[in-house]
Every structure is written in C-alpha cells, then in structure tokens.
Image 1 (cartoon, helix red, strand yellow):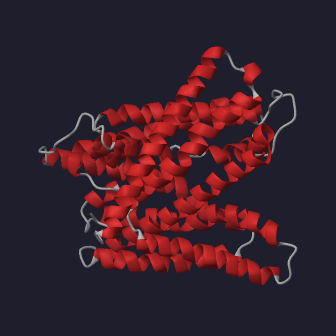
Image 2: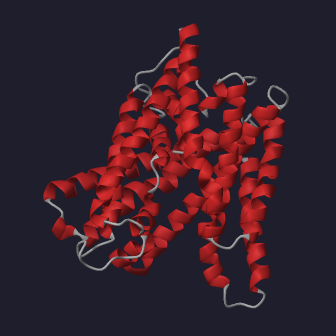
Image 3: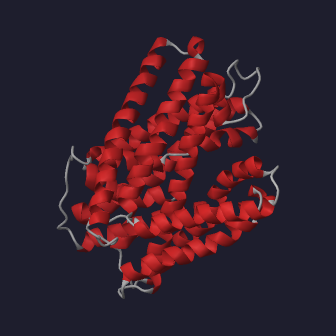
Length: 383
C-alpha cells in the first residue's frame, strides 16, 4: 500500500471516473504477472529446482543481460521510491508542525533533516535483520490513512456538494496509469516471500488474496477522495484535510514516520549488493560508509531540488515499475515456460505487456515534461 495509496484520488482527477476501472484492471493484471514471477521460479514445475530470485529468473531466461536488466530497473525503483519517501515525509512533517506558516519553506528544509536521520541507520547497520524492526509501521500506517481518508472525505462531501468531476481525461490518462501501477508494485519481493512459504503451490492463492486486500484499500480511498473534492483534489489526499485537525496531524506524522523508517529498509537492498562488490578491497568499512553516505545524500538532494510528489511518483511508476510489473514477467515467462502456456494465455500476456509499455512510455514522457515545467518555473511543491 504505502505512499501510492495517498495518490489514488489524484489519479481519478487525472484519468476521470474511468480511473476506478483502471485501478481494478491494473490490479488484475499485476496479480497475473505476480503469479508469472512465482511460476518462473520453478521452470521445470514445482517438483523441479527453484531459482533464487527475480534477477536469477532474468539470467535463466536471457543470460547475463537478463540479470542486468532486472538489477537496473529494480535498483532505479528503490532509489526513486526512497527519494519519494523523503519528499512525502518532509511535506507531512512540515504540514503537521508548521501548519499554515511557510509550509513550502519548511518542507524543503525538512527533506535535508529527514536525509540526515536516515543517514544514521543507512550507513551503520549492516543487514536487513538489523533494520527489520523499522518496518513495523507499514501496514498500520496504511490502514490508519485509509480510515482517515474515507471518514474525512465523507464528512467533507456531506457539507460540500459542489465538486466538479470528469468522466474520462485522455490527455493525462497515461500519467494516472503510471501512478496506479506503482501502487501495485511488489513483484521483486515475491521470491523472498515464497521462500518462507510452507507450500509453494499455495502461493498463487496468497497472491490473489493480497491483491484483493489491496483493491479493498485502494478503491474506497480513491472513490471517496475524488467524490469529496472532485477536480480540486490534491496529491497526496491528506493535504486536502484541515491542517489544524488533530487526527489529520497525527495521521500525517505517522505516515511520515513510516516513510523515514522504511527508507533504510528499502535502501539496504542496494547497500547489501554494493557490500558484496567492495568486500575484498582494503579499508572496506571506510569505503562502505562513504559510498552509502553518498547515495543517501544524492536522494536527499534530488528530493530537495525536485519536491513534486505527484509527477515524481508518476515518473517512477512509468519508467521503472512498468518494466518490473508488466514487461519482465511476461517476457521471462514466454521464454522459460512456453510449453506450459495455452495460446490464449500467451495472447493475454502480450496484451498486458503492450499496455504496460504503451502506458509506461507515454506516462514517462508526460511526467518528465511536467517535472521540467515545475522545476523551470520554481513552482510551489504545494501546488
């Protein structure tokens, strides 16, 4: 769920009410490709040998270039999402504590503060086991955000019924598609989750249930948020609620804290692979510290210079997540398991891949153009 959930009402502003159907369709397609990743782990069937992870699937299908492609887009996704976490955390902390007083000024400054905070666990902790306790806020923060969004949206709708809506907006449809896609990203974690499953054959049921739960969280948040504010809705949706409301302030603080806590957990995946690269060199611990500090500093600088949550999220979804969710699972599945796929599933896979490539390409172009316009005009991050 996470940060993508708070963007969903805004995606209905971008796409129109048709976006509700898009959320359901993207969820269905992502659920299918997630199971493709699962099945590709066992190229000879569940009774055969198991591949170790997503990059290993790429290697099995297309050799070293398949592995490199997965690594590239996976790491770009992690770096992008971590940067997005800094933007969102700083924005919510600023709105929670500065409220109406110079929110834009404080949100930029707090990006650097959040970067300094994540620098400590990011540079000093070595393994996922040491940072796993930081991720306990995740699901609770998402559930709280959903409840607050739905309740406050209904309350606003009861007292304000003059919102305007759009049925379908073709121009921004690809950007909405990209942001929605990011909300369903989780394919790179499937191999590690499956590894701890007692029955790999039952994992497809777990995946189905997981995506149904996500839709149960996403659709009410999107529908009630857009119903309440219409085409005036902002991203993220919590920014539309009263700045001085105690419940909203606490919710923003919880979500912001979750973002700061999740940052080192996600970034640790990148750092562990870099550690494996630098392990044999002299002064390993010094090099590791400076490499990690440099990467964290870069994400903080990008978040400071490009503090625009909505288009930045769209860019990540379009340029990176579309590949991990809609392209690689199909390409690898057609290469590894062609004899196990009926003709209609091959056709469906090609349709999913085509939709992902088309929506991702156009969405990436629109996101880059919007970010360029916002940075060039020194626009306010608050819109």
